[in-house]
Amino acid sequence: MKIPSPMKITWAAALCGALVLAAGCSDGGKPAARSSAAGGQAAAAVPVPAPDAEAEPAPAPEPRKPAFPLTGMPSETETNERPIMVMVENSPQARPQSGLDEADIVYEILAEGDITRFAAVYQSKSPKTIGPVRSIRPYYVELGDGLDAYIVHAGWSQDAMDLIAERKLAHFDQVYGDDEYYWRDPKRKMPHNLYTSIELIRRGVKDKRFRTAWNGPHPSFAKAGEREVAAVSAQAGSAVPEKRAVIPYMRGYTVSYDYDESTGTYLRSMNGERHVDAVSGRTLSAVNVIISFAEHRVLDKEGRREVALSGPGRGVLLQQGTKRDVTWERKDGLIRVFADGRELGWLPGQTWVQVVPVGTAPSFE
Image 1 (tube, rainbow, N blue to C red):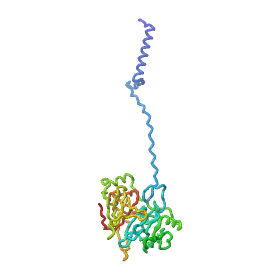
Image 2 (cartoon, one colour; image 1 turned 90 degrees about the vertical axis):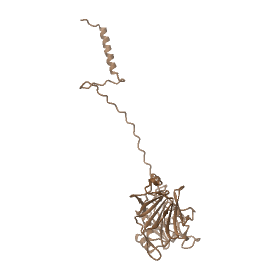
Image 3 (cartoon, rainbow, N blue to C red; image 1 turned 135 degrees about the horizontal axis):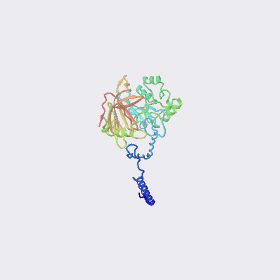
Image 4 (cartoon, helix red, strand yellow; image 1 turned 60 degrees about the horizontal axis):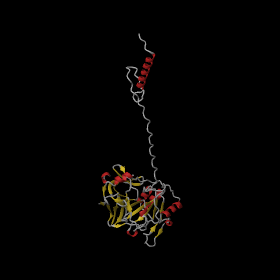
């Protein structure tokens, strides 16, 4: 047998090494897969997962901005001051009134006979002139007590005074002992010339050492998206576009509201004439108008009434040029409105509540 020469062996070994190296460097330089123990087939390479991208942190919620509780309007600081409810006259001799344009909430209800009276509630603003101030009735006492407000009045019916005394409510009665917190305007005839101010009443609170921390109710205010929905009748359930409302209280006395798209408010008129403030000259207006149909009962020959202000009852809500049929109920001391089983939020701004006898027939257009 012929033995290969050493040089041939060296070349053969080099050639085998090159082939092995080429096989090991195949597939882009990746090492060859090892054969499986059974069957000798190549095992699939396990991919190495790429490192997860760093998740972005969730944005921090915006801090809640302070707002006045009864209007929802922006405030520089948190407000927990008890509101002030002032009884304001609405006979022809009392017009134009002062300070109604700066109230947070105004309730209008029949007092005696054909005359309505206002309960004006102040917390966010401090007008220097409010009035003319007149006497109070039991259903107004219920409103003031429910709001945990200081009650400001000049006289009372006996039932109203009994209720104030029984509940030991914080109040200022010009007729009996609190004259220093009022003044009379000599340009007007008595009794239609009695006025007060928020500054005077706050001073009286200190003098009388009344509780100042507020325990009253907060209205529910609509969120931004809900405000937009309220303006679109197709998306607002039973809401329909209505720009004008006419509310007949009694013969010879009619209230109307006309929607002003430029301001998003309802401009108030009485008997066809704009209802203006005596001091500012501004037409009274509201962002929210609630019409509440309530049971009324005449009590005596003077026409004093009993008005059922607990509800529930039928109502109408006017917002952003739309009318919506609702149910109203006084819950937690505040008249609130509901539809389809849920409470409807107010829009930020002034609210007027028109309480009318059941059977009243407002018109809308």
